[in-house]
Amino acid sequence: MSTTDNTILGLKLPSDPRWVNLAAISLEDILSDHAYCEQKAASNCISLIQKYPEYTRLVDELSPIVTEEWGHFRVVLSEMKKRNLILGPQRKDEYVNALKQHEQKGGSPEGRFLDRLLVFGLIEARSCERFRLLSEGLEDAYLREFYRKFMISEAGHYRLFLDLAKEYFPEDKVMTRWKELLQIEKKILADMEIRGDRMH
Image (cartoon, rainbow, N blue to C red; front, side):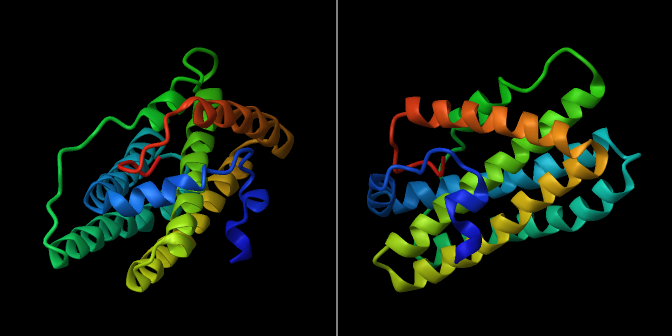
């Protein structure tokens, strides 16, 4: 699907192709980590709504995403149950934590708001790319289709966060910061160990 191409997603470094092979070997771990990623995505949307209730479009757009992400969590849990797999303990997401370290901590409240929107958009873009790899690289035909659906969903979420940023900030400001964060994300990914038991 063309909308998941790295050029369209904006990502500056493709995931190492070996990742999908490692993920296939660690299916219980990758499904467990995926479930927690969906849970955290729902929580992130809730936190944005709570923090910025005055932004009407944000509230209107993210409210159904909360339901969707929590539904995804339940879908992954159901798939694990069908395969007699158990949800493991939640692990620290080193990738997401590293990205969030680069969000503005000082400066204006508006700058911090912009960074939150863009970082969440970047996480969705990378998740979309990882789901594409799973949808193309797994031997299990059912799981390939399973992850193709998630890929399409994440592509929409990525675009939504960028659209929200452009709704509330000048586009040139959004794109300047977006390009900076893309370079930061590239370095974070390049420095990380390739692990098949994590979505990121």
